[in-house]
Image (cartoon, rainbow, N blue to C red; front, side, top):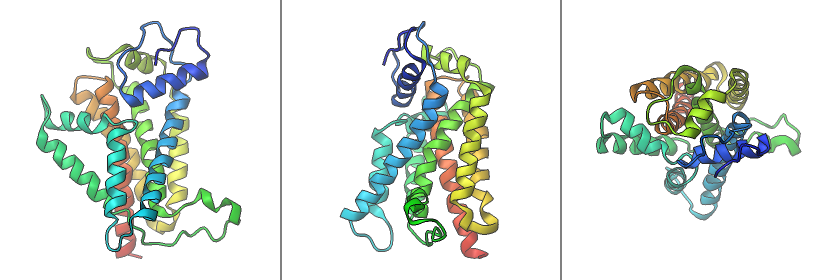
Length: 264
C-alpha cells in the first residue's frame, strides 16, 4: 500500500483510499496521498454497488417471504469483512468508553441487522418515466439505500479532517489525509451525496428530505463527535465516522419509509 512520493496523484490517491478503507497501518511519512479526496468518494460508491450486488445475488439464491433474512445477513457479513470493516469495532469502542464494550458492539450489530431487515421492498421503482436504457440508474429502493450508505460514510470521514485535529495515535496516512483534504472537495462530495439522496428518495414525497437530513446530521455531527470523544482524528475515528454516516442514511431511509406509510 506504500505510495512513493513521486507517484502520479491518481495512483497515489487510489492507494491511499484503499489503505484507509482496509485499515492498513504502514504508510511512509514522506508518501503523498495524491487525489485521495477523489478516490475515497469513488470507493464509497463502488462499495455501495458491491453491497447491492450481494443483496441482489442472495435474493436469487435464497427465497424469502416476510423478512429478507439471508440478504440482510450476507450484507452484514460483507460489511464485516470488506472495505471499512474496522468501523464496527471502532464505533463500539467509541460508544463503549475506555477499552470498548462488548455490549456496545452487540447493540450495534443488532441495530445494523434490524436496519438491513427493514430494507425489504415495499414500493414500486417509480422510474417508468425514464427511457428503458436509463432505468438501471434508479434501481429498487433497497438498492438505493445500500448504494448511498458507504458514500455518506466516506463523506463523514472527510468532514473530520476539517473539524478535528489528529490525535497522538494518528498514523502518517491519517495525518496526511487531515492535512491535504481540500474544503472544496468535501463540499463537492456533499453536493453529490445530497443530490443523489434527494433524487433517489423523491418518491417519499414531502418526506423526501428525511433521509438526506438524517445522513447530513449523522455524518457531520456524529463523525466529529466520535473523533473528539476519542481524543482526536485517527484511523479508529475515521472508520467509526464512516459507519456512523452509513447508519445515519439507513435510519433516515427507514424513517422516511415509516412516515410515508403513516401519512401517505
